[in-house]
Image 1 (tube, helix red, strand yellow):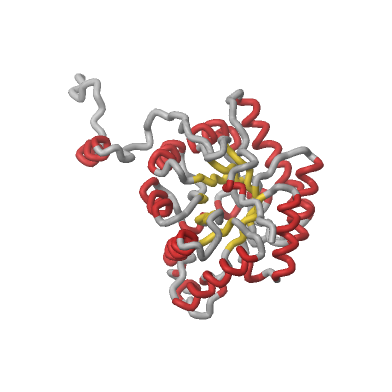
Image 2: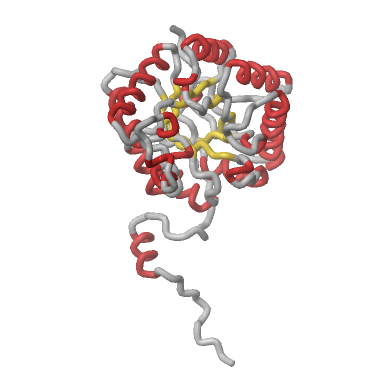
Length: 318
């Protein structure tokens, strides 16, 4: 029986693919993978970011354990919302990071799970809202949190709402917030494709934590579409978010996504709200060691982020 298809495969959505190719836009997941050729402004291909560091006690214990193992860390993420921390504890966390040349990003607390006006968020369809803010008072509270945190020396904020990122970016440009403030879009912003990442970059985000399960082709297009955006990429995830570990892909991820943050250690927990104890911290540190070992064994010449990079988010003295 003869095959009349010929040797060239015709793809579905061929008209759309032709348009996308002609206009330099993403058109397929099966593309040739290439190194980005981009570094941080002050040099380096990657940094190391550790999430769910939500108290001084956890920060201090994690930093001590990393130092004992001679492992690098670029910056920590507080994720529950800085509104749950006193000025005193925020100051202690910032002081400890500054003394050790490590960055600290705090999450803006005003978001639906804490807001009495966010009834829809707590309903059966609330997931479709994400953590986007639905009232003006919460916007004002987000700005107040930005004032408070930056006045205490914080130079990295995590936001969950595109509108809030745009507002804080405008305030930064106007001199109302520090010029060296870095704005990070949380994974809850659901940056899952190159067009969405471009929107966040155009509206002031300096870095985005992408949706956790993106393939190499999509990540490559995100990088090419937003060359100045730092990609914060989870290398391992909570059990409740899939529990997968991508350590064998780390060499490709660094080459494709540079400049990027390897976001390491979430797989030490089943859920991001689980209590963090000494065993959790030990497992996180072990994940950092493993991830960097896979990178080192690959043989690629990947450079760690420069000490001068503002993307480190090292707290400012006050």
